[in-house]
Image (tube, one colour):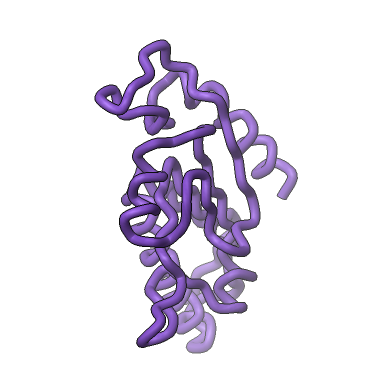
Length: 155
C-alpha cells in the first residue's frame, strides 16, 4: 500500500524528560519512514516537527562509547525540525542538566533549529512550585505557543 503524507508529522514531545523520550522516538519514526520510502511504500518523505518543552538537555556525547541516543546525525538534523521551548531560568531542567553533566541552566541541544525562550507567567515562583518549569500551564502556553505557531506557518 502506497501512502502520501501531505502535512508534516508533528510530535509534541512533551514536557520535561518527555521531550527527550520524543527526541529518541523521532529518530525511530524517521528510520521507519526512510525504510518505507526505500520500499516505495510511501511516495514522499514528510517533515517531522519535534517540540521539546522545558526539556533538560542530555549529553550528546559519551566519552567512552561516542554518541548517545540524544544526538542527531546530519541526516536526522535535516529531516527533523526541532523546537526547544524553555523558560528563562528553568530550575528543574537546569538541575537535570547539572547532575547529568550535560550543561548548565538554559543549555540547548546543538543544532536545534528553533529555540523559543519565554518568561514564566505564573505568580508563584520557587523550587517547591517547580521553579519556572511549567511551560504546559495555560498562562505560559499563551506566551510561547503563538511564536511556535508563527514559525510553523512560515514552513
